Amino acid sequence: MKHKMQEQFLYEYALVRVVPRVEREEFLNIGVILYCAKQKFLKLKYTIEPSRLQALCPKLDLNELELHLQALDKICAGGKDGGPIGSLDLPSRFRWLTATRSTVVQTSKVHPGFCTDATMTLEKLFQTMVL
Image (tube, rainbow, N blue to C red; front, side, top):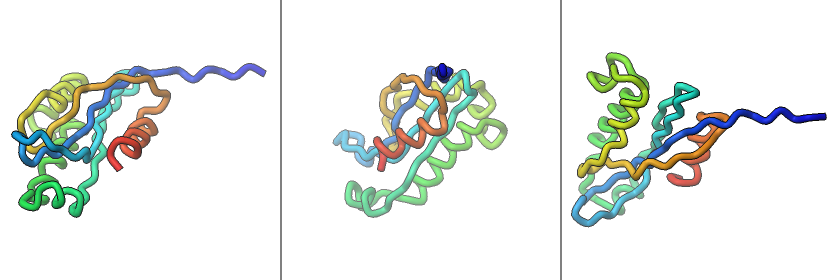
């Protein structure tokens, strides 16, 4: 009996990091943004763990951080809630989300891979790279 090979789809991802003091270059991975063109997939998965974040930076405003991450999530989802960037196509939104910034919320370099299911891959990356 022959098994049908599942199609592999190219995806790209970046880790979302909190960098409380940019000049110190210390960070904590808090999320993953995954983009898969063939599956028309662009999603952010993140967690805010107050004890870990406050250990890194006691003065970090967790409410402001949550609002910033919600805005990124809306951009991933697209549409009017994502503002002007949310109206761009998927590749443009991903490139905007992963552009180099020197702010408290940054992303890693973009890394490629192959997957059969972007949702499962996002979850696996989140489990291994964030939690």
